[in-house]
Image (cartoon, rainbow, N blue to C red):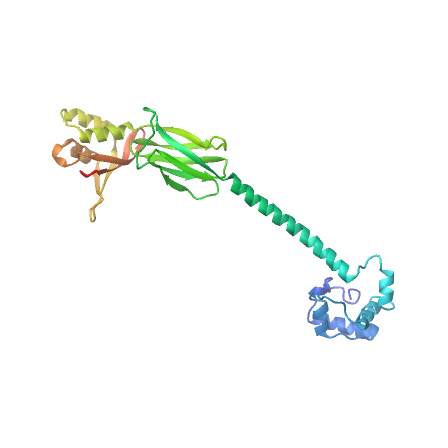
Length: 292
């Protein structure tokens, strides 16, 4: 066909329309043989379980330059395998790699499951050496190729990270402690570890001022002035009461409030604060109610 039609697709299974018509005309002209379009689609464009009829095989063999089908088989017996054996060999060649990949996938899943371990981290106050049992202590765990996970510490000041990774990064936040980024290489034979975090002395001082009697208020105001940046913003969150609104203060409004005994700011709980150049630029707090 390529001698008669040089531009035809060399893959016979891709022929369609005019190409099939040209092939039918070639067979009529060269060997006086006929094939229907239906036969072509059955045997040439689909996987057929059986060989064509012998008369069709003879026509095709003659078109290819042989006397008949027997002549074709005899002259190509070293290159043509019986259909059944060829199919079995092909099936075997396909099944072995598929089975191998399935086994590898299964082993990979099993190894990942085996490698998943629980790692416990206990947070220790760097000054006192005792666990930080603050109920607000949270660790934002940053794992490679995973979304961040926020974990809250238990009553012993610990969190548990379940992973099969070799290292873990976490951002640790707690009231009255400095926010810190912790990086740890994970070891399967050492799954319990202590991490020290540093107290936030400014937050502790503010909380102390709110709870103590103000005898030297001018000195207290000077000390508070040194803690805050001039553009500091202080947020007072509601006391878990429905309908309560958040209050916002600037530096001096907050200092006035905290140094005035009648202001009601006597039980401040620092929730969070941020620093810039060593001074507080954002402070979030709430006032504990008497039951707390």
